[in-house]
Length: 444
Image (tube, rainbow, N blue to C red; front, side):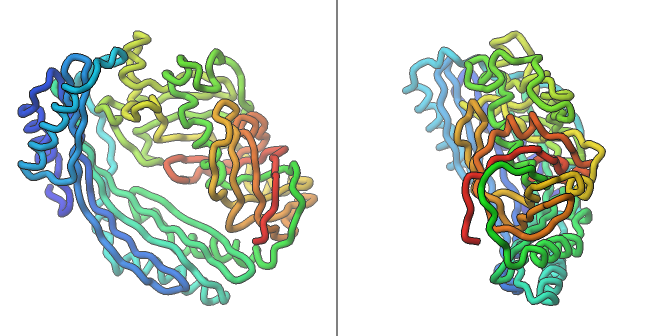
């Protein structure tokens, strides 16, 4: 069925096949992507922007032996596509042979997974406005200001090559996020889904407003080591640095990963199990990677023990293995895109009750990698940071800067939440960590 703003499977594959037929290369790879994005943005309890955007792009890789050229265009008309092919071919002819090139993958059956929901694609500006109104009314009732956005959209991806790969998928997504704020505190909440019907604006509003109300007039606590309770958004942020190249087979073989020489070792807490699964509907499913290879479930850590790595086509061929469907990220090697962390048996309330003196953290802000091999991350707390003393949340505190290793966080965590939440591209619980290093304080 045709969907306005999307090419659809037949048309996307027709365009890709046309490129392959016209290419002079020994091998050719085509990447067609695009979609529709619709956004309602609000600030100070008012909607101030309502926009919709759509478009597509095409990228072609032309290969002569081991000489590779690439070109792209954001127009799919005949002249633009022809120019992209010719440009990629000229670039390839000017290149030196890439002796590291291992070819391109052949076709494999693509698994079916439901990633497109009419409820999300048909969600109107009025529907988004109604969701926003729930939040702004809740904020106004407490004398707070709400800002944020409600975004819905659909995207499609088609990957084809001259060896017969023909992969296509379309998907929808929805994200409602808000910060409720006053001059003396703020609280954040959001919700993500492929099916917008799973998003409850009232729950998002309640969470943000409650956090803002609790965060009024924060006090300064000195930097140092504290117990921490990380809510799912903070967990997902730290987790992203742990897996960013760390579990890539190429990074491990080249010694660029903290896992080099440590496969099979117990590096993490017994409570920590981690896997990547592009077919699990609890996340944001995607049945194939950016090379058109079907995604496989990969258990990366099981009860603290490092198990398996992520492979793209090149590294898999070098090592005589099969790609796990995590390729297409260029020099970064294979990457995780659908992370799941095993739940535990605790609630956040139980974590608080078991904390002697610690910090409850809603989310992090402005995080960066300080040392890749140590997975040392630096950043700040944001929009809901609270002191916990003797098993009770006692007061809000001003935001803290931290410098901490994700290896230590997931290596020492001693309580894990029983509920899983979508946070970015990950599905994770809250966790309790017995020691977390804060290096500075802020004025807000």
